[in-house]
Picture 1 (cartoon, rainbow, N blue to C red):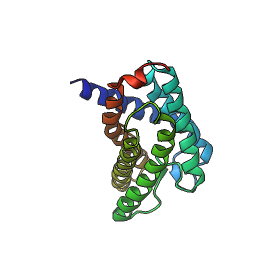
Picture 2 (cartoon, helix red, strand yellow):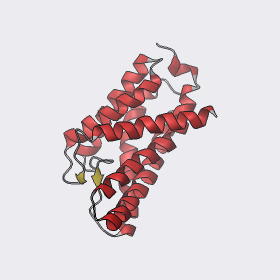
Picture 3 (spheres, rainbow, N blue to C red):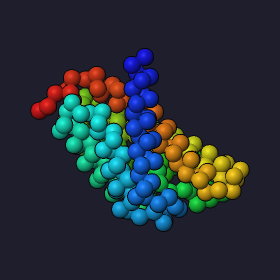
Length: 192
């Protein structure tokens, strides 16, 4: 029961902060979303998530810092502001394939940078890179596909935004299981 409640809380924080980030980040196609938007959007989401780690201020700060840096890096190297851009194709199969590839690469980038800063606190922290890749590949492919279906059905771009919100919800739900495991480890709950 605790795990289910935690998954709900982490997912709500992640999805809710994505909606909040829309005040600063304009949704668009990959080439249109600016790097600063991704960085500040990532900062908003990581700050909300860091509330979970409040018993360890240092770990929470590293989580926010690593997320801020990670979103900047994946935006600069050309992956883009993953989670705030829509794949520019109307072919659902291409959306699935590009979603899996871009999501996996984005998850690899974000997870790797976060791992660099959290590895000293967590045994088996390398698993986070894998979890991040799987979460983002699954979430982005699913969200992109649903966004296209909703767009075709409604002829409104808000369908794509709903698809991106679903992306963040899936990423939150899938990553919550690993985060829950972390919280059960004494190493990150004690300040160093």
